[in-house]
Length: 544
Image (tube, rainbow, N blue to C red; front, side, top):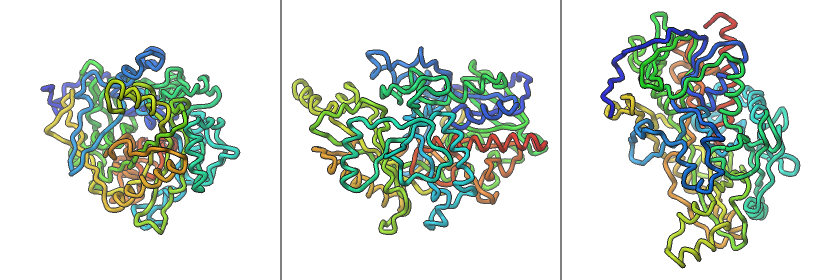
C-alpha cells in the first residue's frame, strides 16, 4: 500500500484557469464537456482511467477473445478500484474507468423513464417526487437519442407503455433474432408486449460511424465504433471544438473552496502520480453515484467540515441500485442465441404499480444474450469428458436469458461513506458501500422470477433455472446527491446545481431521486444535457 498521506499537499500547479473543470468522462461528464465546449466555454476534463483505442485495444476480432477481451478494462494496479462493504449483505461494485466510462462496456439499452417515475410519491405514496417532470426532460431525451443514433421499436412493434415522444427514433429497430422470436412466442401467448430493445447501436451509418453489424460483443467494447459509447460520440465532438483538454489517468482527490464560498479548483494526481491543481469558474462532478459522493466527502474545509455541499447531511445517502433476477431457458430447437445484439427485446407490462401486489412499483424484463459464445457456455456446464461434450451439444445455441431490471426504493440507510482504514493505490480512502433490500424490495424480488418462468414455459423451454444468485450490486447506481427544491432535503437544485455552492454542479446519476425500472444511461445523458444548458445560462447571466 502506498505510504502517501492524501492529506499532505505537495502541489505542482500548472497555473491554468479555465471556465469549467469536469471530473469524470463518462455518460455525464462527456456529454457536459461537449455541450459546454460547443457553447464556447473552455473545459478541462479529469478522467481517472485511460483512453482506449477500439481498433488497437478491443480484441473481439481475435480467436481467443473470450479469454482476453474482458481483461482490457481491468486496472494495472488492482488497488485503484478497491472498496469496502458494510451492512449484512455482500455488494458488487462493477464499473469501468476510462474515457467513455461504463458506456465502453454497456449493452447500449437506451430506454426513457416513464412519466410516473417522476412522481412516485404522488402516485404511489412511496419515495419522493422529482422536482422536474417528464415533460421537462423530454426534449433532452430526444436530443441525446439523435446524438447517439438510437434504434428503437416502430411500426408493428411500437411499445404501448412508452411515454410520449416528440420525435420518432432516429434509426429503425434491430430485427428480432431467433432467441428473441422464441420469447415473443411465449409473451404473445400470455398477452404480454415484447418489443425490440431501444439501443444506442444505430442500424444505419450515423455520425460518421458505421451501422451495427450485430456481432454481439457490445459488452467487450465495440471494435468498429458502431456502438454509441461516449468516447466515439460526444468526446469526438468535444475535442473537435479545440476547447476541451481531456487529462487521462488523473484522479481528483479534493475540490478546493475559496473564502467567498465558491469552489475554485481541483487537486488531482496526474498520470505520473504527482499532485496538480487546476482552477475554474465552475466545477462539475461526474464520477458516478459512488465516486462523486466519495470526492465530496473527501473535500472537507472550514466551511464544510462534513464534506463539500453537505449541509443537508445527504451526500452519499439514498444509495440506490437496480434489482436483477436472471433466468435461463433451454430450448430443444436451435436458436443460435449469440447472433444479433445481446439486448434482444424488452417487456414493460409489469413496470407500473399494480394495486394487487404487496409492493409498489415494478420492473422491466429484458432479453440479455450477452456471453452465449462457446467457451462462455462451456464454463457454466458441469461434467467432464464425454459427459461435458454431450451437455455442451445440448446447451450451446439453445439457451435464452431473461433478466429483470427492478426498481429499488430509495432508503436513507443505504449509503456511500469513506473507509479511512483502507486506501487505494494513491493513498486515498476508498468508498464504503451499504445497500440492503428492505420490505418493498424483498416483496418485489420474490415476484420477479415467476413471471420470467411463465414466459419461458409459454415459449416452449424444456428446462428453466435461475442463472445466478441475485447479486447485490451491478452497474446501475443512483441517488447519492439527490435533486430537490428544499436544501434541507436534497443536495442539488432542479438544474443539478449544489444548494450550498453556487458554482458547483453534479453531472451524473447521483442526482436521481428514484431509480425507475430501466437502465439509467439515457436519463443520465438527458439530465447532463439539461445541466450543461443551465451552466451556460448561468455564465451568460454573469453568475459564474
